[in-house]
Image 1: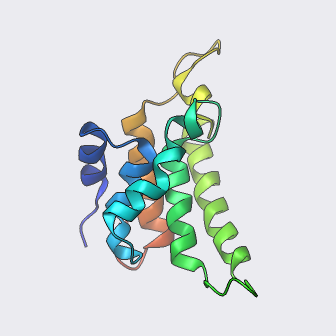
Image 2 (image 1 turned 60 degrees about the vertical axis):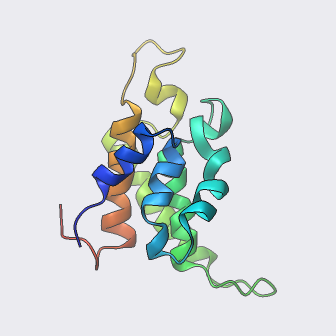
Image 3 (image 1 turned 90 degrees about the vertical axis):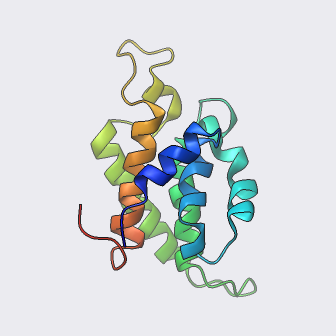
Length: 142
């Protein structure tokens, strides 16, 4: 399967927030509609509503991790550790690549260092991690 990084970038250019761009691009691979992914991740954009929190592209990737690994047995959940491990692997990879996982720092708001990474780059990095961590059997090695 061909990388979907460009498709995520196109969604972002059309007005999807960073989380939506990532989550919607892979929605078909996790059994949800694009509409459901779009609505479910809307609040994750702009660093969870105001650049203070975790990068939206990364939270979109973690949303997908839950859909990949979770066993929806709500009375006795047993898959949290797997979901957390996948999310942690992506978070650590993103941090290594960009020096931060916080939207505010990535954009350089209120910092001395200026921007670390623009949104399209964050989306590309999150998508790359989704493809190599969550769907490594479906996408060629980068």
